[in-house]
Image (cartoon, rainbow, N blue to C red; front, side):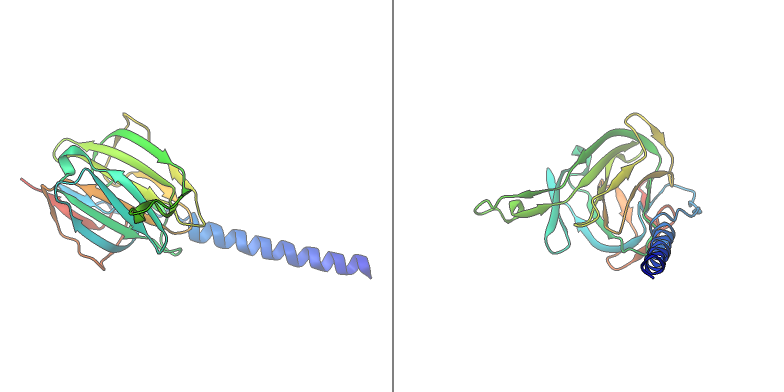
Length: 214
C-alpha cells in the first residue's frame, strides 16, 4: 500500500516536472526566424512594448527605472549625449532573444551583477535593488556608437550574451537572451530619425524603430 502510494506520487511529480519543463522550453526558449528589413534603418533589439522614448540633453549617463523597485545606470556614448533612450519591456510570453539593431562591430561588452545598495541620503537612485545588466557597445559606420542594454528582472537574474568584443555583426543577428521577461534599452545618437512611439508593440529584428539620416 505504501509502495503503491509512493509510486503514484512519484509519477504525478514526474508528470508535473515534464509539463513545467515543456512550458519553460516553449515559452522562454523560443527562437523563431525573423524577416529583417533591408535599407538604412534600425530595427528593434527585442520583442515587447515600448514603454519610454526619451530625448537626451547633453547627458553623460542615464538612470533607467526597472519596475517599481529596480533600476540601473549606464554611461552614454559621446556621440549619443543628445540622442535618444528607448526602453522596451518584455513579458513572459515574448520571445526572449535579442538581435542587433543595425550592422556594426562590437566595441565593448560589460556585464554587471545585480546587488542591493544601502540608502544614501539625498540620492534615491542608490536606494534598493540595482538590476543585473549587460551593456553591448556597437559601432556602425554611419551612425557611430550606440548601446544595447540587457536588463534582468528581480527574480530572473540570468542574461546570456552571444557576441564578443571586435566581432562584426549584421542587422537582425542574434546577440543574446534574457530569461523570464525583463527589459531591453537602446541608446541611439541624435542623427537617427525615429519612427517609434511609446506604447508600440515591437518585434526583434523586424520592427523598424527609425532610419539613418542622410
